[in-house]
Image (cartoon, rainbow, N blue to C red; front, side, top):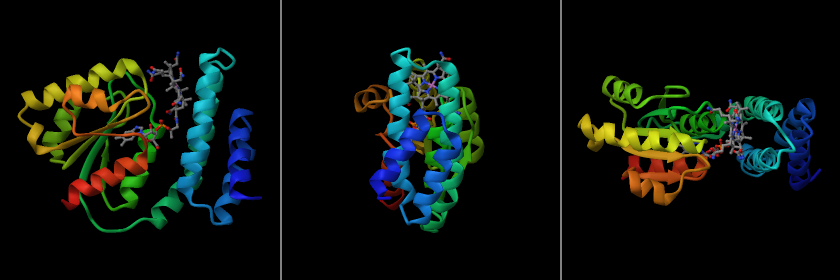
Length: 215
Ligand code: B12
């Protein structure tokens, strides 16, 4: 099977909610040497978008969303050790990460964590539905270099704006770089709220963090 065939088979398995097939295709692709990032970027991301479109078109409902999430999580369990193995191991900097208030999506955040750790960052994960107060408390306690926020639902975006205001009020804005990711986030939004960067995927996000640390 070519890499492109494996990717299409993987997407098909997710859409058909066939968890065993998705895991098998993923394991076989890794065994044949495919880079785990290719499966995330071309397999998981495209499958998630197709699920998303079907959800919006009311062909799929919450149970399918939950099942797709489970399949993606199981796939990540196969990919995570591979990503960590391939990464650099230079101690870099400390990152505090969390999914913003009102948002329970954590798969994308966890992918970002895997990539950061693979590159040698120390990561403190605050989990999901993290309020500004909780971020501020953790920043005071942990003194990180970078704060990373994931936002998958539009209603969480104002909460990310609130966190930026809270950072200024707590006199912490100059102490940390702030990066935000997730489907509804845009460059314009980042400028509006005064964050430092937006990344459309985990790899771009980690590259930005590496540039910050090395400059
Ligand atoms: C799986 C899924 C779920 C699962 C989540 C399981 C889990 N543990 O995360 C469940 C079933 C729980 C769920 C629930 C809901 N969901 Co949902 N979900 C999805 C779906 C299909 C895939 C998300 C996913 O895991 N993608 C795969 C990962 C790998 O990609 P990713 O998250 O985008 O992350 C990548 C990048 O965005 C980026 N990134 C992400 N975060 C960060 C952070 C930083 C710092 C950086 C640098 C990069 C970065 O890097 C990641 C890797 O490259 C999306 C559709 C989509 N296209 O995103 C809808 C989607 C996000 N969900 C949606 C909705 C509406 C809901 C619900 C409100 C449904 C409901 N009526 O109950 C609830 C929300 C509950 C809540 N309060 O959060 C909407 C959001 C619409 C919007 N703009 O507001 C979407 C877009 C579907 C849709 N088209 O309607 N969902």
